[in-house]
Amino acid sequence: MTDAKLTTLPASAPIVEAIEAIEAAGAVIIEDFVDADTLTGLWEDLGPALENQADGDGRLVGEKTRILPGLVRRSAHSVAIMRQPHFLGSARHFLQRPVRAWLGEQRIEFVPTIQLGISRAIQIQPGVRPQGLHRDDTAHLRTHPGPESRVQVMVAASAFTERNGATRVVPGSHRWDDERGPRDDEAVPAEMRPGSALLWLGSTYHGAGANRSDAPRTGLSYAYDLGNLRQEENQYLSIPLDVVRGYPEDIQRLLGYEACPPMCGLYELSDPMLLLRDGSGDPVGSGKD
Image (cartoon, rainbow, N blue to C red):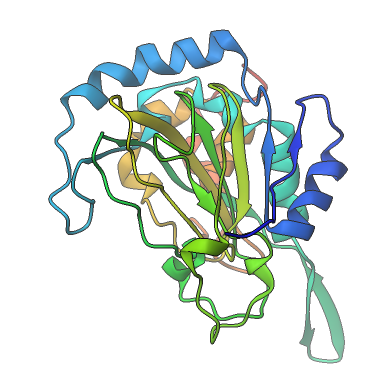
């Protein structure tokens, strides 16, 4: 068993402290990531659908595991998670790194956008076996070492303990190359109370633990990806356009309705926000909470 530990920070901690902890270990725990009212609202919006969701069959979704996708469509309380300063700030720090390219005799600097890649509830039932340790940036076939392409969060909707299958993280594994594989004895459980959250990089090895308790363990996972990569969860099909129009402009852009420099995601050779404009020419929901 490894002696490595994950840093736990209060919600009042400066964003830079969370970034430093992630740079050191590949992950950090933020206490009270969302407030009690937000967590209650998320449960009210998502709980009934999650209860009716069938367990996985062991193929795409593991046995005794329920996954409910499309949380932004299902709950407006997702905005609080998407805007949470440590999550959004870390995503911008690790993902929005300038890229320089030549255009004729000019060298131009581009800064990529970020977009929501997934939003899903994950509930593991009693008796579930541990998930294999893995990297989430495998979704984009990333190689290591290399630039980061994803920053992800798991909000504890219920308590996360070693006994009920808390997410296991291998500290420092974000620095490994692709030849080194993870071992179970290198992983540490991200134990946290409801409302707290685990933040980690797409290059960090992690996986759900075994649930040896007598109750389900539920987490809500959201991920920001580079804007020039395909979203793991197709937000344009997952969220009806009228629902997207009801969100504020910053959330619309984070859902992918923003062109990523130099030319990814264009609509009519322009910013896809044009698609969301109403008759007055202003983006629907702009500046409204």
